[in-house]
Amino acid sequence: MPDLRVNIAGVEFKNPVITASGTFNSGKEYAQLFDLNRLGGITVKGMSSEPWAGNPPPRTTETYAGMLNAVGLQNPGAKIFIKEDLPFLRQLNTNVIVNLCGKTVEDYIAVAEDFTGVEGVHLFELNISCPNIKAGGMAMGTDPKMTESITREIKKRTNVPLVVKLSPNVTDITAIAKAAEQGGADGVSLINTILGMQIDIKKRRPVLGNKMGGLSGPAIKPVAVRMVYQVSKAVNLPVIGMGGITTGEDAIEFIMAGATAVAVGMANFTNPIATIEIIEGIEKFMNDNGIKNLDEIRGCIE
Image 1: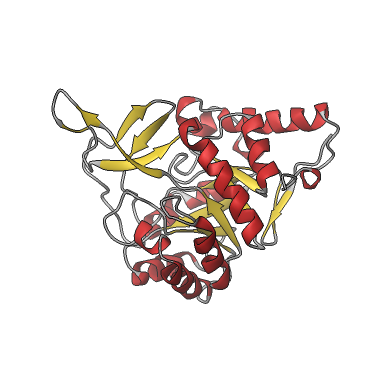
Image 2: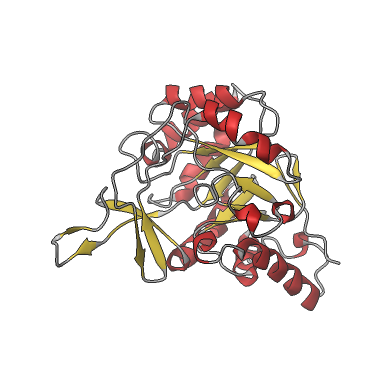
């Protein structure tokens, strides 16, 4: 059998398939459909220190080969999550990644401190790339100096490995990745959604209550693969690649582009067992092509 194990910042994953933040909640709903222990990791919904209400509805709409969402990182707050959801995740034999969000530097520090020392958290994902909130979020992730500064501030307050989630809504994503590396990041994940908009021409107004939202799904995959390729060549950090992955072949593309692991997002909505099919697809590709471990093909594109 091929070896699907990967390592991110000293944390070993049984396979490279992780759920993307905001698409899997804490996994309870999906546990009714398949064994969550088969996953490499679960990234929980973006967490703030205090509860967030999110954006006004409508929050989602379908597009060609994708969807737009403007949920606005609605969540119950770290304290409630730790009390009500984390006990379930601790029972699983898989890694748990907590996505940290905020509107100010102080917000990010507060939520990082809420989770520091909490049992059952294996990685932090610093979300400075969400396009659906009016303050913080993407604003920090589009400025190299701010990216470096916020990464350094969070890194020095926790001993949990820190992955910084990058925004594609920039001119040069490698500059942001280098800034995260300079700030002490243990890894980067990319891409977050691409800022988009849809208009209801009969009602003459935007479809989303927030007017604009994040585009995800197969429509953004070529952009995501390109950016993963560029970033993996620019920094000496493990990369979690994401953006439109629906099959094992999609995941192999990202790995060949340089990704250590992959995260599955929108596909969880259209096919609740997509992650399992992707794991099996990766394994089949490796078997069919005589690949013993993923190091043999990772970053093979020059």
